[in-house]
Figure (cartoon, helix red, strand yellow):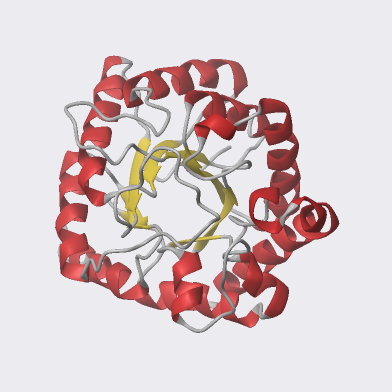
Length: 308
């Protein structure tokens, strides 16, 4: 039987790619966080450890860049599955060595490009996602499908996760434009995405939570409120999560592999300000995405200690 979090507040880690860069791991485009797996995997273990020491209760496998979009087709075919398995083994070993109760989340990244719903092709995506699922499954406690840009992409992921007995969380990336309703990068409404996932659950097994990630902090609260409204309509209780990035707003058609996305300097205090909004809106799992460092997670941990 699946274990579903639904606790008062659980802390995720932050963005492992930027953390690798920060601590001096080999890091460049297009390889992104996969470069450390190829050249210096000890840095991956250190990045996980840094987040655990800051207070993360869930660490995410460094498999985000183990896809053709980052590795290139040849390297992916040769080593993609092995690199994803290596990343899962590293995370498992780090989690098992700590005295804290830390869970490992297997990561299912955008198979054909971050923030690019226009590049999604279901047949190719299913093959890549299935490969990454099989590579990590032995070593993880739960699944987070990350940076989902469209309803079509979420449906493909639900097909891959349909037989998993582990908790499965779906993390959507949002349009960075602030509005009265939250939208995905595809332009589709968050409310429609949540409705679709709830319908998929009847066909392909339960989902355990709906998250929002890799978007600016300012757009998260509305997405959480929109999600909560649909869940209440269906009398469903699911985990709701949020982990924003520290990027400047990403525009439509962003070419993720051409450069390293420009950041803004979000202090831990500023990030905590947004996290409190998400928590009060209904989120019970909170962490960080690209550019959110252990110092930000530490601020979340210190705040968590004050909650009753």
